[in-house]
Each structure stands twice: as structure tokens, then as C-alpha cells.
Length: 318
Image (cartoon, rainbow, N blue to C red; front, side):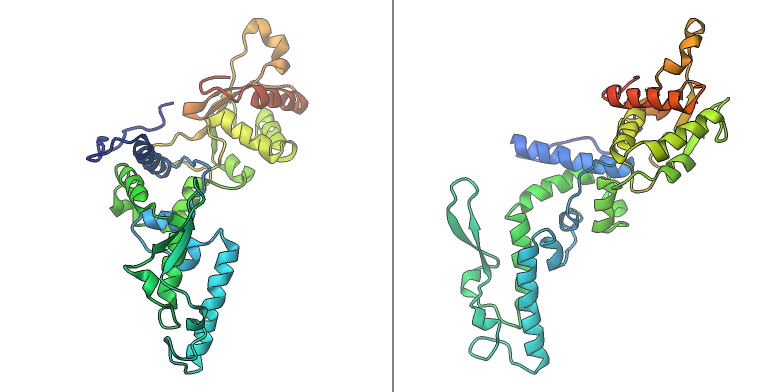
């Protein structure tokens, strides 16, 4: 659809020894994330902030690694609270004391279940970790390592491949201006469509303008008559993307975005008497919506719904 003007600065070269389809897919996934950020095109996929921290070479907090594992997060939090209270009361950390964390008999290791065979195995979090006891003095290190392992499960090499793909599109010097949470929002997109911002970010070709009756009818229908899923279908029909950007609907000169544009649709003279039955058209790559000059708001609503329900699967014109 011509949205990625200019292309990436670096040619795509596979890393030495990369011959597995899974590794190739991870490289592509990293590049897709890069293009999503570079062109402000959300993917609708929310990677946890901890994964973004890993892709950026940063260190997330222990709680970020178990953000979606509420039960384990509560367990670790309760152990950290025990340690904090014990140390605040002047307790001496370590085995052989009254340390309540040491009494839990934790080790710097994790028990994992093989997803295929179901067999359990013990994995060291540090060298010889199964022989290293956890106490109030080292519980914070354990919390970080245990939660990180629980989320990543030894996929560090795979994340490195994704990182390589990401950095081939956007260098780290530019990515470093974002934090992990911001990048997570950029690639996921907004959870809802803000019609007010959408309208403010839309431009018109003559004879249309913001106060034109057809335009007034259009935005009234979008704001008051369409459901949230239908607004997303309109986004898809209009631009080829069903997820609104986290940055709203303003254009970006850096990304070379086209503005959201509405122009009057051409209705052949012989069909002018059927104008109120003529559906809108869209040129998705250029974000152009072509609206006939409907006589009534009801006619516009009817034809718009037909277009977004039955014409939103293509990528050229509908």
C-alpha cells in the first residue's frame, strides 16, 4: 500500500548461522515492530513492558516480569514484605538466624514443566543456584531473577534475534528516547477511537469543509450512531488499519504519513438520481474517504454502514 516510504536504512542480512524458520520469523517480527514505531502504525499487539525492556537492553522491575501472573506476583510481594519488616526491626539476614525468608527454604533455582512431555526440571537462576539459599539479604535479587525466568523461560536468544530485527529498522540511539511502557502503547495502539481527535485531524477537498452539511452528517453518524466496533471497521475501510494510533490522528512529517482526508465522490451523471444509494469509496494507502453528497443523514448512515460492513476487507478501493 505504499506506506513505508524510504524503506529501512539497513539491508536485511540474516545473522550467521540463522537457518531455522522460527529464527527467521523472529527477525521479521522484530522488523515489524520497528516499522510499527517508525510509521506510527499500531499492530494491535500489546507486548508486556518487560519484553520491551529486554528488546531495548534495559532492566525491568521484578513486578513487570510477572505483570500478568497475579498469583505469583502476590506471593513474591508477600515474601519481600516479610524481609522488609524483618530488616527494619534490626534482624540479621541469613541462614541460621530468625530470618523468616530463610525459613521458607527457597533456592536460586526454578522448577519448570516441559510443555510437551509435562516433565518437571530444576533450572538454576545463577551458577549452582540450587545450592544457594535465599534470605532477606538477597531476596530482591531472587525476586528479579525468578520473575524474569518465569516470563522468559530461557528465550533470551530469541529476544536477541527480535532485537536485531528491530534495530535494523530503528537504531538504538533513537529507540532510547522511549521507555518500555511507551513503546508498548505505540505498537498496541489506542483502546478506543476518539472521534473528536479524528475530526480535528481530518482535512477536506473542495467543495467539502468542516461545516458542509454532508460532513456534519458524517461526523454525527460516526459519533452518535456507530458502535465502537463499527468505528474500527470505518478505520479499516478508510486506512487499512483497524487500530487507532496512540498519538491520535495528527500526521507525522517524520513518518511521511498522509493526512486523513475526505473528498467528494464522483457519481456519474446517469446515476445522479440514485446518489443516496451510492456507497462511499476509500483509497486506503492515501487515507482518502470519498463521500457522495447525500441529501439526508439517513441516506449517509445507510450507505456508510453497507460500506464498512461489506467493503472493509479490501486494500484498494471499496
